[in-house]
Length: 207
Image (tube, rainbow, N blue to C red; front, side):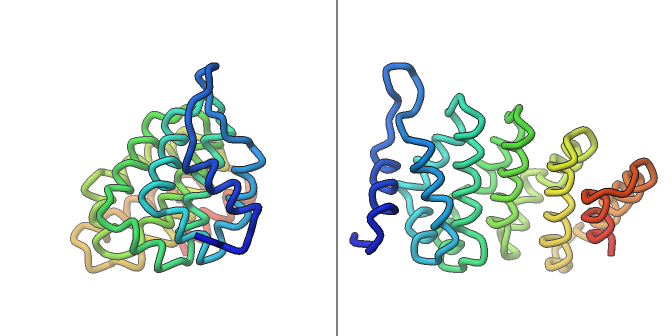
């Protein structure tokens, strides 16, 4: 396919041909991932990046790359591709992406990568079906566990996720209870922390 953007095309094709080098690390260049993340916000490029082959490669990087920055970029590319892009969101429906991302979140040890995975998760949990899948996989409980012990960056992403996702699906059974539990969690957080940008995000989620 001719995208009319040689920088994207080169990085995109290197992603599709991604393989491990003799050093057991991935051969894709940081520059390629940066270029893909830059254009992923474009609806056409974002759509192409979540089709079956490139999506598989991004998830492979997110799962297996030893370098945390590579995993972070893979998550950011995925999230940026899905954000405000209904066509891209439709492509990943029924692929098990939410379950996969939650699995990565459980095993990820780098808080910066976790923050980016939560961002990607928030762009994948869009409609009622995806929200139910998120709850079926105990995603809300996982985010609370992470919120209670993680960095302020990750806590801010959790608060933004709750604010952006949960109130829009009030008809799902049990969601009001989840929202009430999150409110208690946020209130406890605010009582124990000085005012900062994360506290502002938490307070915004409560409101």
